[in-house]
Length: 314
Image (cartoon, rainbow, N blue to C red; front, side, top):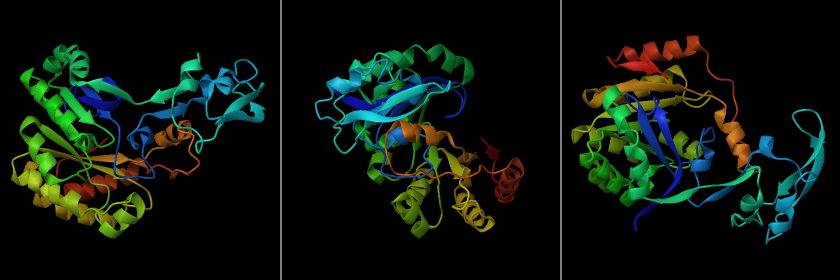
């Protein structure tokens, strides 16, 4: 049976394309954006997460200490909970943890939990069809997202085909960093590509995100030339891509394919990814900055509108 590694299916989504949508989030991404608001989507395998507010503490529970076969869980230092009461939380050594899930299964408070489920296309379609009346009423549909959903190309393709057979509008949320042959296969079954443009400078793109941007830009042009529809999404990240000069490059590039672009979405940086990063128990630091002001975002919006583009701030 063809399966995909999902980490969430979110109904009543109004941020992932037109109308009311249900978004299927697939795990795994070749990019490593330091500000990623869904860091649980980056790795391909199922991963252990820990949500501190749910944890009862080792003195009140402690079941996770006794079940880990690798000895990866130990007592952390004494601290205080949200009420100010003393508590000792588990300490997870990720270098020893193999994400077997034994501790998550033992954790009745669901503070330790596994992120990533293998689902068949039939299972996902069963969930999606429940929301079809909302799609029909609102002009919405299904969005397949990630991570990078096109890194699971066979599953994504079959899911899109099944949606179209059911009369459901489709969208693919993609970084564009995949082989053109993969995009070409899903294109006939995709009504809209939600297409990320994170940075126009390829050297900076590779330095910060881990991959260059030539393939991403080339694929955007090819989608436009092939008759696909695009919704360009630009995360506006302080000290990275938010300068006036950078937005000149955005405007010049997008204006070349603007006949295929329904809208350009500006996504102001936020700190949502910080707490999610902490749940993954990783020691690496995540990018943190002050979000851009409304006035600043309006200036960047006006800058792109000068190129004749339809722009909105998300």
